[in-house]
Image (cartoon, rainbow, N blue to C red):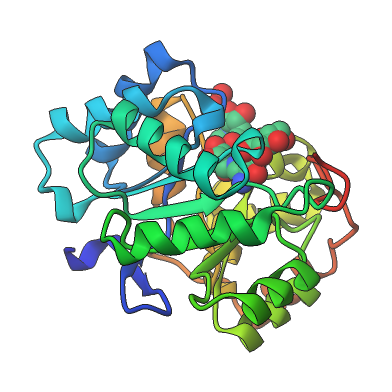
Length: 276
Ligand SMILES: NC(=O)C1=CN([C@@H]2O[C@H](COP(=O)(O)OP(=O)(O)OC[C@H]3O[C@@H](n4cnc5c(N)ncnc54)[C@H](OP(=O)(O)O)[C@@H]3O)[C@@H](O)[C@H]2O)C=CC1
Ligand SMILES: O=C1CO[C@H](CO)[C@@H](O)[C@@H]1O
């Protein structure tokens, strides 16, 4: 993997570009072009899921880009309907058929769905896929500390990431501390809080002005400096380029402190204890 993708090292030694491209809500027909635009802008990490119904477009773009396969990092996720050992193995095969890839870089359990109480069995299926070399790393998404601890108590492979909603309005400090203790990286979904109010927040606008950057760039830079893996989504070519142009400036301690003060439990999505 070339150096300009700013990789972080996962707990199994695999490198992940710290900034990736999210494709939730991009229609299947538009996904190939959006991902090719992202590759042209320098992204080398794509975040999709069976739920997003656009894995085919992601796979097409990977092939048509002409990029060496080992320079592109692709994540997908097993959806809530497919929890359980056998169902997860089938869901993985179906995702791989749609993606048209031989090996996946990262496979995640999308939500723990505590009501079903099957995420430990689902994890055992991911462990099997990892041992079989079908996926280079396995992780989870939307897990709370108690879900993580249960997994770690009962299974062998430590997840490499927990992908959770995280942005200045929902900073997830307790969870980030738990991740550090358990040895996994924090991956931020909805890193721009879905592009709403946060990007018009007076504090963010002030920092954008100070650094002659856009509000989205300030927020993404904050994520990078916290050590988060971050996966902003956009279908707008100018924004796709803007969102990756964040490696050539830095927020100072005061900037980070003022952004820390924006925390307010401002979820845009479901709470993991309630979904499912
Ligand atoms: N594991 C999970 O449960 C979840 C995972 N995810 C993953 O995280 C990714 C990112 O999260 P997502 O929900 O898409 O939200 P984001 O926080 O990435 O926000 C995306 C929205 O912000 C807009 N936007 C993007 N860049 C800019 C910019 N520079 N200036 C102004 N507006 C901007 C986009 O508009 P436009 O596209 O029109 O340009 C879009 O409406 C997803 O695509 C998905 O891959 C997301 C939700 C849950
Ligand atoms: O990945 C996802 C995209 O956003 C959805 C709506 O918040 C989530 O439920 C889902 O987990």
